Image (cartoon, rainbow, N blue to C red):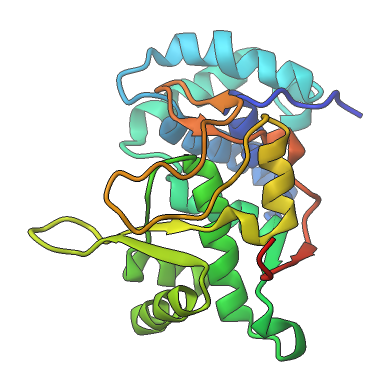
Length: 250
């Protein structure tokens, strides 16, 4: 078993690349490295040197996870595949997709869904919670079409989930969608023990979101991406399929 990954953007890219895949064995190598490249493309600055990213960031993280053998490829072949993928990819794994990955690993169950399960609303709350944890003290954006694609529901359903989440006290509206600016929200991280525990590891105490432009809600985390934005530890993510009941105010 490989050692525990250090909480870095490179570690997140490796973890994303090594996630369970049901593709045939003959294309496992390409799929895993494609996912790693895709994640790295989004987690590192657009103008980053891909050679430096591969050798100084990705390779050490891979070595901590068991080496390139986990990808069924040699380091030399991995370099060629990674650099080729990087050149082809204009965009990488976005924060919404990262939050969706985390939401699948640890579901945040709102109180209204404990007795009457609703997978769509639970998925929406989970995505919002992990997205807020991902961006730290920044507001979150929840575009209905994109979130709907991730949750496999219609944009109208996402719009209704946003309204219900505000009514339930999970989301606070920070800025309306006007003058071409996207609607901004903040999620109350205090509502779920799992998110509180993640933040407490960095010595941060989550506070109630305030519906004011530019309000500071949660302090910075212990992990930062290459562009300086705050992130939580990838290595602290729960195993796939676990659930975190919550929804009651602390």
